[in-house]
Length: 95
Image (cartoon, rainbow, N blue to C red):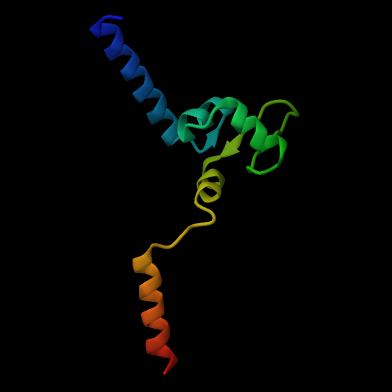
């Protein structure tokens, strides 16, 4: 692969990522590019109803980007600093 082919491949990848980031409704292909998950992992999540999805025509899967973002950010873990801040606030206001 020569340098031009590498540049074109990278530009195509950037274009795909930009389009996926603007869209509000994602296809499986968009979701693969958006999350980096493999196709098989996405289908596994859908099959087990772990990830929010829509299937309006009974065949094609669609994902609402907002719901995917919320799903990706669930079960958030606080940093040590955040825990310490909460402890200070709790003890300060508890008096």
